[in-house]
Length: 392
Image 1 (spheres, one colour):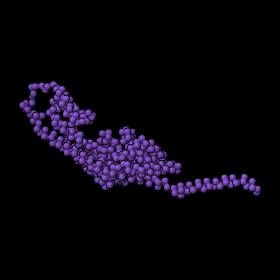
Image 2 (cartoon, one colour; image 1 turned 180 degrees about the horizontal axis):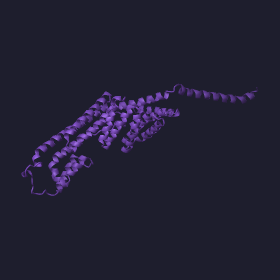
Image 3 (cartoon, rainbow, N blue to C red; image 1 turned 60 degrees about the horizontal axis):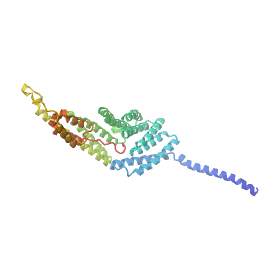
Image 4 (spheres, rainbow, N blue to C red; image 1 turned 90 degrees about the horizontal axis):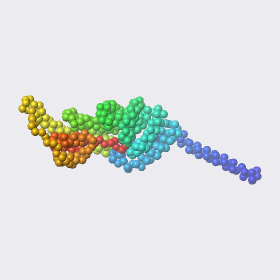
């Protein structure tokens, strides 16, 4: 072969060598996927562990910023696993990756970013016929709507679809969580009987759930139901019934405190302790109100339940008309003691009605007790905190 012929053939041999090298690299890249099929699952588990560590740390300390870099690492890993699972058509595992990606956004209160991730997870879980993951995606979609937009209707629609799916999945943690979330929604709607029914179904599963910290939220929600019922004595006089409800609220707040403490959630345990103290303070006020009410009834029993004609009080004089100067004094006093008087809550509306010119004389008779009771209600009212770090 001539020198010129060798030069002409060399590019062909070079091309073959490049093809062989490319094939070798392709096989080398493919081997880990074939030899280690669980690598994506392992990476997903590690990412989920980072999310759980972030949540646990926040529950223990109340600090939601220090471990954000770890949350970012988990997010990067989950994006990789989601794509890998989709490439392998492992739709169930891909759905779980998208659920956890949604959780990362929700824990940072990024509601708009969380919504499409949960929606994608639900779609994939439905295609994979994975009822548990579909139920979990719907639960988190409901929680996102409730906390992010306050959209009770959308949240209720998602939960209505999630309950039968969670039941069919056989996962008791998912079922407990969806029932508790439904109760939480009904509390916000003011439908206490429906909330109590959901919680009764949830607590029937208490001994079967794996995540024991779920019971903490169940106890807190049930305590909220009892507390709301007890607070009816702001305008009703069934004081014995209210006191019993306060006792039940006390018991459940205490149970929530014990679960948080046993789980090492010191920050949440402190929050439960504050709720317990607030409930007990409101109970003490209601008991004082009940005693005052009984004393008034005893002192006026002869007046309001006349047995003879002389028991009836008659005033031959009419009350004077409205006094603008006195009315201005009353309004000034009210706004000093009750800065939130313009709020559209029961207490504020009642006080406004009592202080109206048409009721001024009646208001003056009861102003001291009425203003004190209203002020006490405002300062002992139990404000139930939102679920920590994006709903937990």
